Image (cartoon, rainbow over all chains, first blue to last red; front, side, top):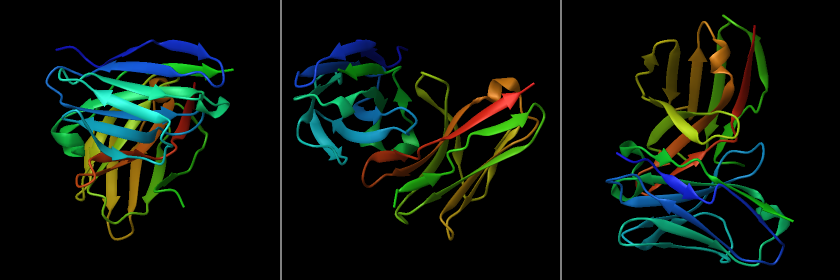
Length: 115
Length: 110
């Protein structure tokens, strides 16, 4: 059983650029949630994808967008990068539209630095 | 007010000590409760679920008080390997998401 894999592991971008982060869900999981974790903070919910559609969104602006593919993998896109977007971006896969009782498995994250 | 609030610590305690973490949540619609552990520069990992009746897993005991909207984690006989950040997490089945507290940092000293 493969776990959640994220790519790339580290990334440096310039303010104003665009970035795409990728996540492959754990085998058998059909739901992917994305979180942003700034230094010293807990993970903040960005959005979730279930059956290739957005299934809930946190308090993030529209320049944060995503996709889910038929194989349940997912992408997080961030446009017009700002310095405050520097953070660890975590992807978590789960079952049943993100019902917490089915468990969440996290990838090791992508560390994004915006300069 | 944050949806899930924790004392950020850090807690610095000697090996063998008992340490307790507290957490409060603001949304009474919360349906499931967890403690996650996060090591430095790693992803969060589930430590244990929290049930209304309270539950224990070895040296770890978790309690939930729905009336007070309060969750706790007790670590007995702490080990050096317990040093990590402990994240309080609440889940909403209807909203299909889990929400994290900001975490409490624990450091165990020899």
